[in-house]
Image (cartoon, rainbow, N blue to C red):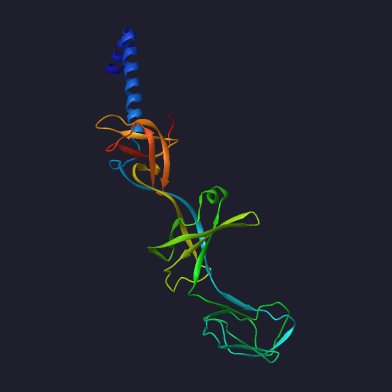
Amino acid sequence: MDFLRKTINWLRSHRFISLIGTLLIVILIIFVRTIITRSEGTLSGPIHRGAAVDAVYGIGTVTALRSYAFRPGVTSTIYNLYVKEGDFIHKGDKLANIDHVLYRAPFDGVVNYSPFKVGENVFSQLPVIVLTDPANRYLVVSLEQQGALRVRVGQKAKLSFDSIRNQNFDGVIQSVYWYNSNFFARIDVSSLPPEILPDMTADVAIIIRELANALLVPASAVDNDSVWVKRSHRIPSRVSIKLGVVDGTMAEVLSGDLKEGDQVLIRRKVGK
């Protein structure tokens, strides 16, 4: 208690020194907090130049080139069925006898719809059998308007499927078209494996242009057109940049005080 009393008395008699000491402590706290705040996050590896791809992204649906749906023009009776769902049928094989008329397969394919039974009546325009050729397929990609403006016939596309992420497939834009205010691109793919069936979906990247020597930073490090840069042993500083192509996890830097070898912080967004 005596020590505390003496300390208080000393501070009262040396108010100016006490004020300076308090200010120094406050400045030190602010300085330390600034260092901690600016250093938050994970330091990237040295930034470098490399390839970047400007692309339009979308979800594509695998579509069969040939599909046959038999729909009777009038109410009819099924006298015999020769196929069931899942059957692989060759061209010319018997499909059904409806009102004593025999129908045959117009091409090789798989029966993927046959809901009726022998003896049932089928109303006009209802499909009795749907036959699809799974060997000849293409993709249809739905596009946003801005994406459709950039897509052209002949551009390359990269495709990936959820179930086989370790393998990508190449395609080429065959056409760009529209229907009912929606925009689409048709992609020809020459080497889809047989397990990829019509109506399956794929992630699609349509290549607009490729850059061979772009200065790249992690896209996750960009915060409102700026990055936090760590150079040598100095405190990280915020640097404004102009971005170009954002290629997946990386972003192209068009301008700004950045150079190869700099390291950037991947951090939570903080105020300037």
